[in-house]
Amino acid sequence: MSPQERRKKRQQAQSAAQNKAAVNGQIAVSEEVEALSVKSDRRSELILIVSVAIAAFLIFLRTVAPGLIFGDGTELTTAAYVLGIPHPTGYPLYMMLLHLWLKLPLGEVIARANLFSVLCASGTVAISVLIWRRVLTSLLPKWPLKAHLLGAASIALFLGFLRNSWENSIVAEVYALQLLFTVGFLFTLQRFEETRKPSNIVAAAVVFGLALTHHRLSVTFALPLAMAFWWAKRRVTDFPWRRSLISALLAVLACQSLYLYLPIRAAAQPPINWGNPVTFPAFLNHVRGGEYMQFQLLQAFPGRPFSLESYMNFFFLTLRHLIGEVAAQVYPATVQFVTDVFPRPFAIPSAPFFVIGVCLVVVALYGMRRWAKIQPLTAMGAALVVLQNLVVIFIYNIADIRDYYLFVMWVVWGSVCLGVLVGVQALLQRYTRWAPRPEFAYAFLLLPLLPLTSNFSRCDMSKSDEPEVFAQLVMPNRTDAMPENSILITMGDDPIFLSWYRQLVRRERTDVLVFGANFASREWYRTFFTPSQIEKYQIRFADRIAQGAAEFAEQVSNAIIERNVGRYPIFTTIDDPLVLQELSKRYTLKLVAQQVFVMRSFWGPEPVRVRRIEPKRF
Image (cartoon, rainbow, N blue to C red; front, side, top):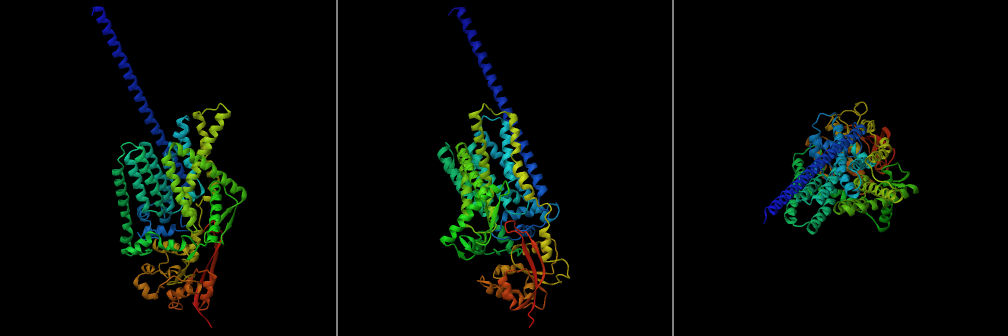
């Protein structure tokens, strides 16, 4: 090789080396820029999530109930305060979390419990931002980052301000935490679908396990979790599904150890000890909600199963009510209440609102279909949970079934938002030259204003004082209205729940013996009283559930009235005319107080009467 050829070859080699170095340098710079961009995106997402959660928290805080509330909230709060056992299924995780939260010096105990729901609801909104940001990024990839972020934030706030969601966000109840668990579970499925990492499916199992110790509706997570393992086995190469399955099962089982709270605390005989689950049969009956399953699952009325005709009537009433509720989440629907057919009240929408509800469901199905195309595992997981919730709604005949709508409405309205966005984009692209621009993203902020402005006055409980007035009517602090050492016989949830709270938390009227007439045939109710109280008042319990008003009046009389009338002042809130008729054959009933309250919006105004029971005068 000549010197000229060697020199030319060296120059070519040097040039190639320089080109390679330049390319490597460009790649390194490109990777660094991409890393900085990802870091910036994550920072923007984090700032947005925190901002949205704070905004939701402040709005919920503005409307939160300041004190006593109607419903199960006062019983749950009292049980958590004394580390007791509330009504089935016991909610052990909620009891422990709420008990710790109540230690914070944040006003009255019930106000702290209400605030806990505000915190859970704000957390749900934050996780919702994460979910919908990922959905929008995959569904609308040509849209700018700002549109994805603001769109996700707007959808999350929109869903947080739906009526049912808002109502459960401002009172002490188990459903705000349940929705947080459900949305959190869906997020872990979404993360697993994106990353295909075993750690994310195990995280989903942990959420499932914890949620099971909170509310039995969490059993609906099992099918989506099983589907995730099936999907991973078929779609993910070299996925360690056996090891992941074992880890997931162990995680779920480990979480169930929290149920030990029930027998451990029941053995300590707390003043709230529903079901007294110290034995395994009692524990199992309490956890599975045995009494509710027996009297309300596929039952037209307690103890009376559906006939084919009555169930078809129930089914179509529920269907019409549910479709109307879709529209009513955002705007007050015109409804006709049907309250005299079954124990459950039905809000039957007018024809226009029914049509609107049907149209919204159709748009939701379209949005869900588009979601399933980009994130099949996540979308199908959400759909499976919704379908199982709907099955419960159509077979479980309880009055407060609206609380079971929470995740159903979250998915339906989230899918409606997706369907509208995709549809609008398709129309604009077909008939105009419109292209997404960052500044257009601010239009998304108008979305949550619709439910916010519509539902604010409906959901605002900041000035609610009816429960306090109710509690004072039933068990007044004034001894001239209810003398010391009186006996108060209650009927229904609100009178006894509010009285428990006042006696055990506020330490008001601890001299009054409160006896729940509807528990007269429950042997476990004995544990609510001290041995000295049982001996002093000679309390007896029936050995079977009463069949009819006459037997019920007999049981109540034998339990607490017969041996105490004339010895102690006795008052009652029993208002069933048939039961009162039976009691009036034995005793003199004197009306001493009455007032009308709206305890449940779907029942409307209800009169509450207090009567004094005295010996029969002949």
